[in-house]
Amino acid sequence: MSWFDKLIPSRVRTDGQGKGNVPEGLWVKCASCQDVLYRAELDRNQDVCPKCGYHSRIRARARLKRFLDPEGATEIAGDLESVDMLKFRDTKKYRDRLNAATKQTGEKDALIVMRGTLHGEPIVAMAFDFAFMGGSMGSVVGERFARGAEAALAENVPLVCFCASGGARMQESLFSLFQMAKTSSLLAQMADKGVPYISVLTDPTTGGVSASFAMLGDLNVAEPGAQIGFAGRRVIEQTVRETLPDGFQRAEFLLAHGAVDMIVDRREMRDRLANVLRMLSKRPAMDPPEAVVAEGQPEPA
Amino acid sequence: MMAMNPNFLEFEQPIAELDAKIRELKIATADVDINLNDEITRLQGKLVTLTEGIFGKLTPWQVSQLARHPLRPYALDYIPSVFTDFEELHGDRHFADDEAMICGLARLEGRPVAVIGQQKGRDTKEKLRRNFGMPKPEGYRKALRVMQMAERFGLPVITLIDTTGAYPGVQAEERNQSEAIARNLFVMSELKVPIVATVIGEGGSGGALAIGVADRVNMMQYSTYSVISPEGCASILWKSADKANEAATALGITSARLKELGLIDEIIVEPLGGAHRDFEGASESLRSSLVRNLSGLDELPTAELITQRRARLRSYGQFDG
Image (cartoon, rainbow over all chains, first blue to last red):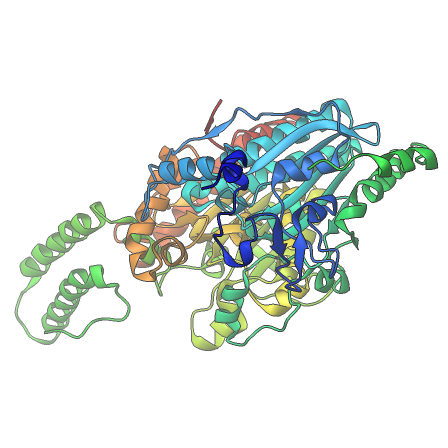
C-alpha cells in the first residue's frame, strides 16, 4: 500500500476489489429497469428511480424522517419489546430470531410511531420496517399502533400509517391474530370522534395487516407498483392452480377494482396528504409560499 | 387385520375396533339364544376406559384433526337443535349469496337472536357448493349486514366459527377480501348489542376472526383457533408441511392452551370421544353455554357493554416495557 492509499480512510478504499473498481454503495442498480444510479441522487429522489419511477422499499425511520417536518418529531412507545410467551421454537427460537432482527436492523420491532408535524400541523405518523421479520405484526406492533392511535384520539390530530407487512407474526400465534381486532377497535373509536386516519399501502402489504388497519383508512392510498392483497400469490396459485397475471395485486390493480382512493408518488406524498388532511379538518389551504418552502427544504438522507 | 374405518381417525382406530366388536356381539345376541350381556357390559366398560385413555392425552395435532373430523357437527347441525324458528337470510345485497356463511334469525329459549356461522359441506357436492367452508368477501359482507340489522332491532348476535380460513382466490382478491374482513372487525368492535362467539371446529386465522370479535369468546373442547394452520406454519417456518405436528404444539391452538393464555373465556366440554360421537350431548353443552353467556351480558347497559368490549380488545397482547 502506498503512502497515498494510507491517507484514505479504509471504508472508502476500493483496493481494486469488486468489478470495475466501483466503491460499494456509491452506485446502485434499479431493481426494475436495471439502470445504474448514483446513490446520492437516489437518496435525493426518496429512493424512487429517476429513470423508471420504481419505488424501492425503504426503512421505517427514513420514511418518517422524509414524511414529517424536519424538526420536533418524538417517538411513541419506542421502548416496547417483544416477549416470547409461547416459548416458540421452529428451526430457530423466536427469541433468537428477534435478537437477529434487532442486530440486523437496529430496531426493537417492526413498527415505528412518531408524533410530529406535517407542514406545521400536528400529526401522528407510523411506518413499518419490513426489514424487521418481514414487517410481521405481533403484540408490540399492535400495541405501538394502539398507543399511536390513542395519542391521535386524545390530541385530536390525524393519524397516518405507512404499511409494509407480510401479515401476522406466527411466533406469537393467536396474540398476533388478535392485534387485528385491537387496532381495528381503536380506528372505530377514531372514526366515531371524527379524527382522520389515512392508510398508505406500500410494497408489500398482505395478510393480517392488510385485513385490518391497512384497509380501514378514511383514505386508503397506495404507492405505485406496491403489492397489496390478503392472500399471498403462491397460496392463491396453489389454490386455483393457475399462474396469476402480471400486475395482479399491484396498486394499479387495486385502483382499477375500487379498493384504493388514489395512487400517490412517494415524492408528492407529503404535499398530497397534507392537502387532503387540511380539507378533512376544515383548515385553510396551504399557502403557496409555504409549499415552496417545503419543496426547498433540504432532503434528509 | 381389520380395514381402517374412514369415519375414525388413525388414533381412534382402537376405539373403532372395539366398537365394532360390541356391535357384532349385540347382533349375535339378537340372533342366537345365548346370553352375552355380561360380555357386552364388560366390553362397554373397556370402551369407556380405552376412549378416556386416548382422549386424555391428545396431542395438539390430534386435536386439530378432531376439529376437522369428517363426522364433526357443523353449524347447520347445531342450529336446528340449539335454536328454534330458524329463518335463513341470504345474500350480501351487492354481489352474491355465499353459502360458506350461514346467516339468519332464530330463537334461543324463545328469545330472538341473529345467528351467523361458517358452514363446510358434508358430501363432495355440498363441499363444492359451500366452498369447503371458506367464505369470500360476499360472505363476510352478508354477515356484516345481518349484524347491523341485529343492532337496529336490538338482537344479540351469536356466531359459530368453523373455517380453515377466508378463501384465497383471484376473484376474492378482486372484491377486496382484506377490506371485507377488516370492516367486520371495525364494526363488530362497536356493535351496540351483545356478541357471543364460539369456535365449534376450526378457527382459521383472519377468516375466523372476521366473525369472532365478541364480548365472550368460547371454544368447544376439541376445536382449534390459530393465526395459521399447522401445515401452513410448518411449510413456512420448517420448510416442510410434514412438521405440522410440531407446528401445532408450538402454535398453542387448543382450547386448553388458549384458556391458559387468557385468550378465550370458556371451554365447552364435549362428550367422551368428541362431539361427533354424541351429537345431542355436544349440542346441549353448546346451548347451555350460549344461554348462560347471553344472560350474563343482558345485565349490562349498552354503554357499559361497549366499554367492556373495548377494554377486552385493548388488552390483547403481551410485551415488555
